Image (cartoon, rainbow, N blue to C red; front, side, top):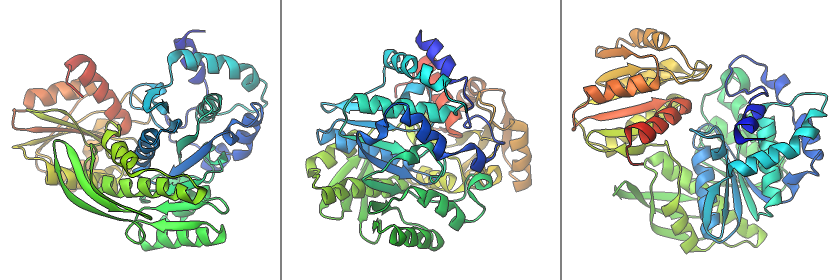
Length: 445
């Protein structure tokens, strides 16, 4: 089997990341995931895990915790979704303080191993269940100390919720996937809090009060120890220089001063506080992470496509803003960190997202808008996004393009050296743009 054949086999399973209309409660079932993993002697029980959910920032928190554990000398895995360019981005491994993606050869070997048993199942799994199985089997084979695992969707019914983690992280919870998770913040929070297990430790970002109430009540019912940012963990922004945030954190046990991190934005300092709280909480299990490991972990964290500067003169910035709150955080970060003459917004959004909310936030800073779509069935047509923009009474120029390449080419033609090109919306769009810019335009990441 070649790598391309392995990927084709994986893509033969239903992928809920690429469709919008399905029943969340009937399509997602942990019992099926348990049956799949039982075929492989439950690999998820053979490593310690940290489990992260939330609406926005959970990938960033996962990447930060992974980086810190790596710098502490632990062998660890990272499982995230979706990927920007390559499926292999979803599964990373760190050993001897260096990390890498799972190799093509390893993907092929794992697919060949699981295929006969998967084909024996009466009920066909989803793509995410298969890929989660691959990740857990891979981590078990590598005899890892830890795996840092990001929830795919929600929490309670997510395939990753088969884990029994040492620590759970909950990032900022806001409105997203309402048709699947519920139309109130409390209902969404209940789904997210489904990852909290008995007698575990939970670290939460600051939340709206109705969300905090759900988290606190769940922790009380599960006898779980809860630590909250802005209550038990505190951060202070010092400033930013050389494309890095400079900040302090007072953690659960220690204070860390003048930390540096190549992820910009106040929202990333909140994420950093959650990640630090999670690794500090491991002391409850007699696992100690040193201050130098924390410092180096933040300094070396790698999480592309999040307020990422790909080029200067003109500035080209990538960021995945997939709901109103993410768009607001992006807008505020752009105003705070960057100087420019004109902002050209390249925007593409998935059909199931809050298109109006995202546009209302971002139009405030856009001098011109170039609408486009990712190569994904979930991508909304640019014309439909334009219809939403017309309702907001945006006065500046709006251009429609067929694909990412055409949109970037148009933006670069329009931009002067003093301008900013902001490429945002769907992570699928950001991934395509990043790949195109690095591979064909040859910008330096």
